[in-house]
Length: 230
Image 1 (cartoon, rainbow, N blue to C red):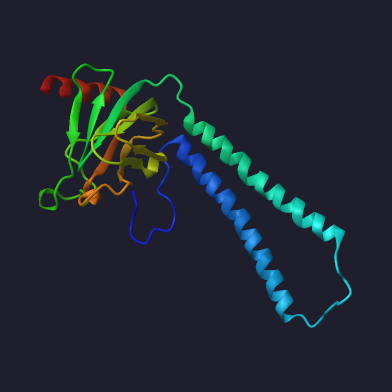
Image 2 (image 1 turned 30 degrees about the vertical axis):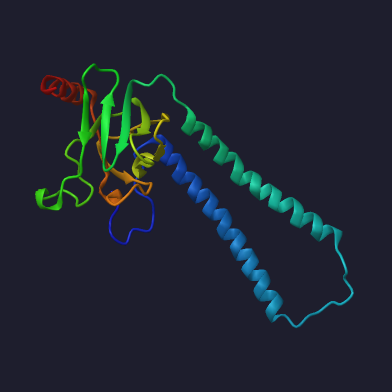
């Protein structure tokens, strides 16, 4: 959950998000070292009183500043490609959920069940109870079993939307007429908040996403209650 004056990412709640955080630290370290080196060279060139008017070229220096950037790019590209392939892996999901964006709410359909589907609207400010978060709470949460592979099929009914939950490392575009898919594993129980991340109209800011990860036994009880109420 984000908090005021936060500078870093939200706490990771999935293996993919943990990998993304590690990659961010890895890339930031490389950028910091490059920035420090460039700043040092600029300061040294501006402040030095030494000059050399006779060096027209240097083969060694040209080789260094050609090979070194290539090595740096490889050090960034390899872990990045590994995470990209990891994010695309969908192996034997235990649960498939279809999320459809509307103006301005989300609807969810648990495709492994016959009649388990519902709409999820934002809870208005005047209806909030103590402990709930303004503009982030929804009247129906997307409940999933913890530590189980979950596949999410994402689409839209009207305009472009985007289904995003930062703690789970997910952001998938919802496009009318197209069915995109993503997958994740919640590594711990909890409630994870997200929002529509594609400007979709006047009430774009009022499309919260709430994912609740619970133990399998609790998920089975919840699904049974939802099916009884359907």
